[in-house]
Image (cartoon, rainbow, N blue to C red; front, top):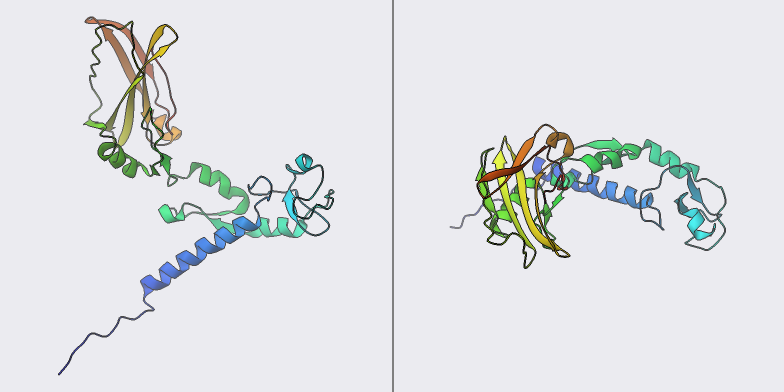
Amino acid sequence: MGGGMAPGNPSSSDDIMDSESVNSETESSSFRELLECPVCVTPMYPPILQCSNGHALCSGCLPKLQNQCPTCRSKVGPMRCIELEKVAASHELHCKYQNMGCTAIYPYHSILKHEAQCSYRPYSCPYPGSECAVVGDIPHLVAHLRDDHKVGMQSGSIFNHGRPKSNPDKVENAAWMLTVFNCFGHYFCLHFEATQMGMVPVYMVYLRFMGEKEEADKYGYSLEVIGNGEKKLMWEGVPVGKYMIFGALN
C-alpha cells in the first residue's frame, strides 16, 4: 500500500499577492519607459514635443538636436504630444523602491520628488578611501562595514578617540579611520583623516549621520581636539545626513 501528500493549492492568497506585486512593478516599469526621453533618458514632463511621425522627446533636448528628431531625423517643431501629456497626468506609479519595502503610490508628476526622499532608497557604502560599490539600506550597510571593512562599532553618545602621533608635522601617506556609533536609535560615522597637502599636514575629523538631513537636524555634536594633554580646539555642529561632510578641523 502506498501513500502520498497532495500538492497544495497553487492559487493561495500569498501567490495572488506576489502576482499582483510583480504585475504592478512591470506596469510601472513599462510606463516609465514610455515617458522616457530617448535623448537624455530622463522622464518627460510637459511640454512634451513630437515630430511629424509621432516620436516624442522632452523640450529641453530639442535645442541640442537642432530641431531634428533623434529617431527618424525629421524636423521637430513646436508640436506638442497632447495625448502623451494626458496619459502622464492621469497615471499613478508605485515607488521604484517597492522591492525594498516602499508601498507609496504617487501621480506621475509627483513620483520623482518622493523617490528623491524615499526612506527606502539605498545608500552607498560610506567607507572612506575606497571605491566600494556596495549599496543597501542602513542595517545592511552597518553589517557590511562591520563584517567586510572590519570597522569598529561602539554604543553610547560620549566617546574618546586617541590618535597618537610622534611627529604631527609629517604625514607619510593618507590615512583614514572610521568608527560607527549606535546611539539614540541611530547610527553615526566618525571619520578621521590625515593627509598631506603640499608641504602641510592636514588632519580632518567629521561626523556623518546615517540617514536623512531632516532627521540629522534633530541632533548636535561637539568635537574636542586635544594635544599634549591640553585642550586646543572645540567644534560644535549638526551632523549632515546622506553621508555628506559637515566640517573639518586642521
